Image 1 (cartoon, rainbow, N blue to C red):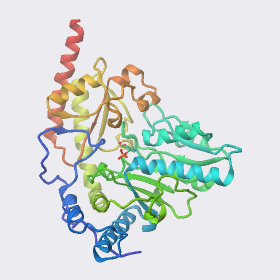
Image 2 (image 1 turned 90 degrees about the vertical axis):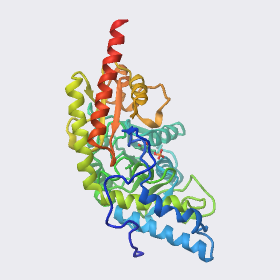
Image 3 (image 1 turned 180 degrees about the vertical axis):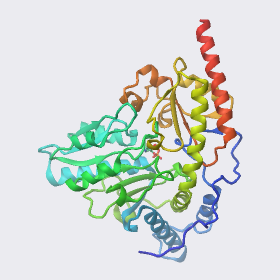
Image 4 (image 1 turned 45 degrees about the horizontal axis):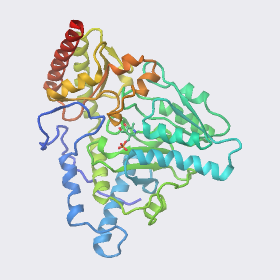
Length: 413
Ligand SMILES: Cc1ncc(COP(=O)(O)O)c(C=O)c1O
């Protein structure tokens, strides 16, 4: 293993350093986060000075190669794996697709389709997992989508009960992007290991909030996206445990990433991802304390002022990501509330931000048994490093005003 110095000095600050961000109260960190200014500084030289192609043999190229090696070792250290088990991708959507399609097609290639290879996943996965699983279904694979309970947690027994002799992959997210519900991945990982079934975990929302050591999770594949932990957009990781049966069906090309993902590497992005992950891991405990304290404050103020609001997700806060608060406010359309909040400088989300503009009610809330009406009346607030007590107090005041106004108008009709 290459011995490396960390990118980030120990004197990291929890509070974001000043950025060019306007005075929006940004409560949508589950959708994306700003790039940490220290991370940006570490990335910058790789755009303009050390811009060489890592495949080139001269010094500039080899500087790029060395940066990639450092980044790979750094990510491996956080995940507790070896550097060769890390593949850099163009984000978690690509990582999820590669994991699911790659393992499924490998099984099909080696064993044919009698019986059809089977995948177990859950009905609350992000579309980056659901859609490739559904598309494999259309191409002759079979898939079981295990359902969550009413709090948005998929009990391990439901996943385990779905396993068949022909199951070739289990894919379960670490924590849900809409509700923040943390899933029993370690329990599922233990069973997957016992039965010799590759286990993929979409850990996109967990980075910086939950431990990421792959042996503790018990997974063989794990996806991350840098922009969810104060790194740049369009760059991600797929961890692949050595000896995992997988074909690299997705992106052939110049043989980069050991032939697993062709294409000239995004050196500044990868450097940014690794620095951001180091920092997120370094700050993890402080981040959890900071966000959960403010989230609890927001939740209490919101429910005190709007007593008929309904929490979407586990009531037990230990089962929820520290920065997540998803509520349904009866009689108030989420989209209407969002527009009103936006006009008053608060950015939040109705359902999953990745499906904004999609008129469908949230598949996650519906799978939890919510009515279409409740699902459409839901709002997600997700806090971050830079959120302050003033931010959450002001956001709740604005929300209360909005709710009163919408309800008054509805009553006047
Ligand atoms: C749980 C989860 N998985 C996958 C993704 C996809 O990430 P990206 O859009 O960065 O590819 C997201 C994005 O919101 C997510 O929340």
